[in-house]
Length: 63
Image (cartoon, rainbow, N blue to C red; front, top):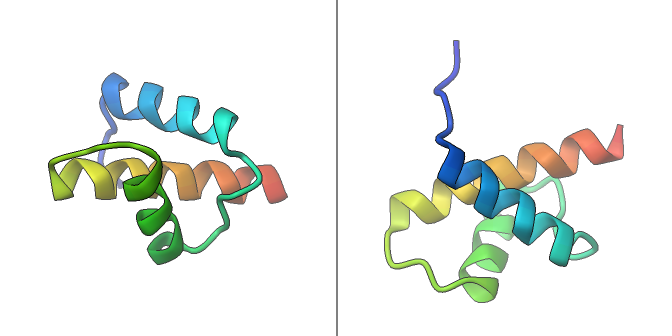
């Protein structure tokens, strides 16, 4: 079983994904750098959670 994402993470991820959908790929490390550039997130853990959910959205969009 995976970890449950909070509504804050999902909302921020979906907003970033809709604004910059062409930029995100299915690679987590690349998305982590992009999320750091697009949004000012002070917490590394929160940035990684958002990048992980954006990666999941990108993978779902490719299929």
